[in-house]
Image 1 (cartoon, rainbow, N blue to C red):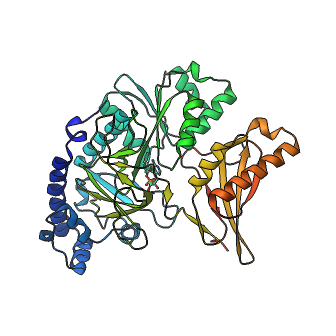
Image 2: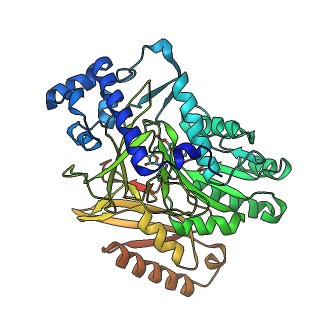
Length: 434
Ligand code: DLL
């Protein structure tokens, strides 16, 4: 189902007209109201009236996470605090957190956009939606909650954690749609198996997963183990939270970006040059309708590419490829770029391993060493030493060829790597600690 066909099916030329109108309005607004943006535009020698076409967006300076941090907590807000009715915050695992604000109008738009995401992923008013994202400062729980209510679905706001209870509730309340991170979905599948609950005992039909990168291989694994159709959805707290883009269940290939509210660009993260569609780089987003915290050319650090293609679902919206990682997730090991998603993809193609893994980088002397910890599957772990050694050799060979550097593989017992109820931690970089 398409939740807002009048926007999601808008012909491209009409969409561009709308975007330009909103962009001009946005730039005038931030120039008048946010000293930070006025300062940056003055410095770059750009005035609001210089924005005459969508291409003129390129004249404007980028905004970064550091800009948000330096203006912590409310410095970039474009409305007085009494107009802000909600705040959320990013986790702040690295440095100061960033605070985001929403006016009543922002919340209304946000729920429409998460309703679009849910509808695209196959959810309707007859569904029972279990939201296993954290509720709180994290945007996942509340963001998708209001969208699901707007759709008219029955919402179970269970939040994250207490995995066995999640499964009991899923079974007893007749959950048909699961909303959480893909790694938590896998953890739920594993716990179900432990509890002897089979997917046939559940009414689960679809899963909408996001908030962290996951590969198509991982999608297939989750779909088989939970007996569902799984779609991806993307967002980030600074820009809004979930509701920036989402996959449709018809195609399950690429995430439709809600272009009436966001202008996407992809840039080369080093030269900052805007790249043509189809080329991979860093996603940059401009918010077109946000009132409390508008962002101009926000550098997301997420790696993807943009493309337009006719989609069987009927949406005309541009698509972004499944984000493959973050520029700051990328490990540089002996000069070679390594992404956790490459490891995930390779492991899921090999038999005898599970999709639970961690990359551990350390520096021995002056040489970086990459160790990949991989959980053996149950069956494999109890096999003979010889079989295990063969598996380690096979993984080592595959990873070394995929990554282009030598790696050391450590096979660990099933269920020993830490499970997460939120975002999985794929990388332990011991080099930065020393
Ligand atoms: O994770 C918002 C969200 C909640 C999105 C629930 C989808 C569902 P943050 O905690 O600010 O917000 O983290 C944002 O998570 O910049 C990406 O690096 C990553 N991310 C989010 N969705 C995806 C996805 C929420 N579908 C950061 N694929 C983003 C890959 C994702 N990475």
